[in-house]
Each structure stands twice: as C-alpha cells, then as structure tokens.
Length: 303
Image (cartoon, rainbow, N blue to C red; front, side):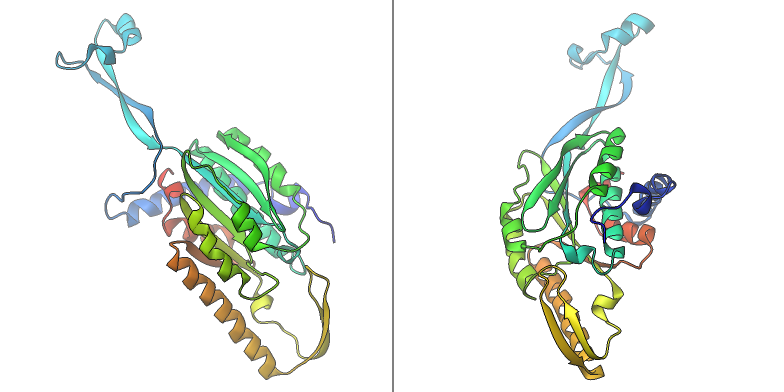
C-alpha cells in the first residue's frame, strides 16, 4: 500500500469549513458548561489590545494614546488584557500499525492533528508538528497564524507510516520548550512490541512541561477481530508471522486482554495527570473532536 496519501484522500473540500463551524460550536458549548473561572498552572502571558477609555488625571500620562489625541483632540488610554501564549505540540505516531491493515486509523489521526493545529493557529498560538516511530522527528518548526494551516496539511499529508514504535526512546527524546506553557497532544494507537510498553513509558511524560493529552486511535476489529479457525497472522511493524487456531473462547480472551490494556493505560495516565481518550477510527470526527476539547484544555480556552 502507498506510504502517503493525497490531500483529497484526507481532507475534502469542505473540511476547513467544518473546522470553522466546530470552533463556533466549541465556543458555545464551553459557555454553557462553564461554571466559573478556572485557574491554570500556565506561565507566559502577552498583552493584547482590548479597548479605549477616557484618561483621568490620576493615571500615568504615559498610557495616553497620543495618536488618537492628535485625531480627536481628546485624551484616551488603551486597555489591554493578558492572554496566555501557548505552544501546541502535536505528536503523530507514524508506525506501520497506524495505517495497516486499517488505513482509516491514519485518516482519523491526521484529521485530529489538523483540527488541533487549526484551532491553535486561529487563536494565534504556536504550533509544532512531530512524527513518532523509532525516534521523534520535528516535521514543522513552530508556526503562528491561521495562514499556516496549509503548511500543516501539506506536512501531515506527506508523512510516511512504517516501521515500529519505540515509545520508551521517543518519550525520552521528546523535549518541548520550557520557555512557554505547552499543550501536548500525542496521537497513537499505543501498540508496542510488548503489551505493557506504553504503560511503562508513561512515567517519562512527567518530565514534559505543560498539559498532556493522549489520544488513542483504534479500529473496531483491533478490539474485536472477526476471525476464527486456523489462520496465519503477520505483525505489520516487525513482519513476524505466526500460525494460530482460534476458537470463540480465544477471541473472547483476546478482547478481555485488549480492554485490560486500554484500562491500564488510562489508569496510568490518570496517575500522571495525563488526559486519556480512546477514539474509534469509525466514529464521526466532528463530535469526537468536540468531546476531546470540552474535557478541559488550555487550548480550547482561547477559542
């Protein structure tokens, strides 16, 4: 199968229009759910112009907008509000299992990545894109401004999905900047060579500065395979082959093991204050994207 997809295979002509609608829906949903101001451990703020008001003699004359005075012959001061500067880091698992044998996983993962980037760029936040397989590679340097969404789309469209996932190494190598508060989204199926490799690697995320989110993309047949009898299976990342004779009871035990794997990963994430969410590659993207953001993120707060 091809390693990369054409843009139209991933994002149809109306995709960005739907992202704009999603941003509006998110703003409305958050307004309904908000119960009061929430504090954040974030650091790094910038002042943005908000409005004007009349100058009073008690105020510092240096706050006067002299250009406006020259036009109106009246004294005004500029009002500012502090807005949080965020660095959004999006890590995309580009190992073979994210595209084979279910390419729907890749499509879902990249749609989430582009939607997150769009949201941040629209809010004038900085966005960085990384690929993750045997190592971590920065695909795009920090970008800012909504006009850069096309660069993001082009970059993720060209990603090659092959090889294995070395989560321990990748989690050790990834070092986001500590200069500004970071929001980190890791999009993966979290399938490693060993069933517990993802859970063991989670502890290393505590070294990442900022707010961390894990998004697990799975195909329904990965949890509940429709197979039975004698068959040969190939591990897509290593090429290893094994012959099996599977009964219904064997498949049921596999489902129980898969669920335990996901539950253990979610529990480990909770213990390290990492937001964990599982998404099926067959679920409607728009609703699940909203569900992801309303769970709580500094990124959504700027919408």
